[in-house]
Image (cartoon, rainbow, N blue to C red; front, top):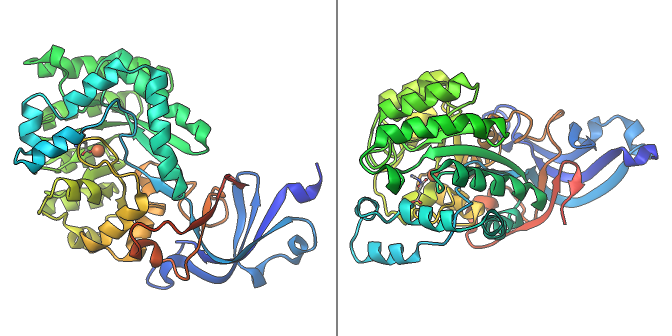
Length: 409
Ligand code: NIG
Ligand code: FE
């Protein structure tokens, strides 16, 4: 192998590195930027004038990015991408007046997706999820989290998690979260604590098979209680697995304080988060993952406490929450726009929310910024300024994606 194929020099880039203090240098901006990659990682990123001249004299294979805006690869840190069927009929029911909770209590909602997911083979689940994932990839997603939670038996949860992991073959990094505590399966009707015991037992074989990166739960009136969530988190801790939580989405259950006790990677949704919850998250370093798609699709009116999160220094991430019930979106760029219009994030906060802070919500410190040592995952955009990524809705300005130093077709 010649030395020129080892190093790649990416020149003529206007970099939104997202590194450093945003107050000093918004977007971590480098106007005359370049990056040097070796294998899957960046060796260097910065102003071309500061590059070691050796790398300009043929040592590295040069790639001209044409003066385009470049950001880190996008990270969708909260999805339920693997499931059978869809729930458009439920959407219609809600338009006629039924609430999400009414439908769930009547045995629809998550449970109807459970029936369809159980009936599907691993390959069918994979094929449907791959189709969905390609939509996300088209907008520059290079890392994707996928949750289980529509199987609710050991075999079906394993089937979902295996299907999710197979998505890596599409050219995206996949992290999987075990969400056995998503809903009560019909065979456990009236025996919720027994179900919690069962889902805790399943954690060990799923973990042994290498299918779990984090353990999640739905702590809610129509989901699992804080006491049950604690049992699940204790089991995760026993296996050395990090936790995250669907918390305070429809009501304030104090889930975020509980999650903070377990140093949760993230608490997600958070429309009903209290000031005590904000403080607990700040103290534990958990990321607040805001999900404007679910807020919009459920026509919620209670906003997450964005200013309080900012004031407390809690990192904010943004995600699609793609799922068939509350957020059937397949556009992370649309979520950037909605995070700004609905939650009043700035475009820079929104971009940090799908890069550096989304990485943190997954416990990943090797991506989300364009700096030495990070993965060479980046997007090249047909925009003049990165604030346009949140400005347009329904336009995809992606030109090129590089993942692990290799251009994705
Ligand atoms: O993130 N909140 C619970 N889980 C999903 C909804 C799942 C469903 O309705 O199928 C969510 O919003
Ligand atoms: Fe969710």
